Length: 210
Ligand code: GRF
Image 1 (cartoon, rainbow, N blue to C red):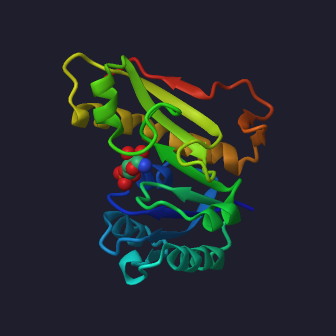
Image 2: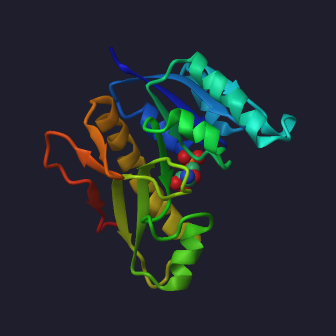
């Protein structure tokens, strides 16, 4: 039986697209967006995947909205919930409900640069290597167990947009990889660290390219 996945997003959905096109042993049961106009929903419709707009602005209270969101997710009975550019903080109750089957991608090499504007901050700090991280979500924002990371070189003439584009290419590689491992039952969380079962495959991608 293939792994059922629900995707949460808020915007353009390029990571969702990369996941949907990667030929993974999964069934994307639904795509849910807190922003009804998200381009990611249009792409889901194109592929015949149930696309669910759930407008958070209609629910001023975060806990109430997250409870509704959790109900909608449960309706689709996923094995895994994937945050793919979901731009809202999740309440502790929501995270507790899905802990261990909730993945996120963050555009930095965590634990460096949690939070927003990661590319600007990386350039301001003068780091020479930047990247992205797929991790399990825990109550500790952007600090959950790390599944896989990809690194890209920072160039002397980089702008936040140029760097973001290079990092995004790597996001599109590592998110499908992480989901494949999950679907194959190969991710084991032990003392806050993720081990890859039965394999010596590296959980890092080093990009030297442009
Ligand atoms: C990506 O940069 C991801 O790392 C961050 O939000 C962005 C989503 O982009 N969490 P997209 O909607 O998948 O194109």
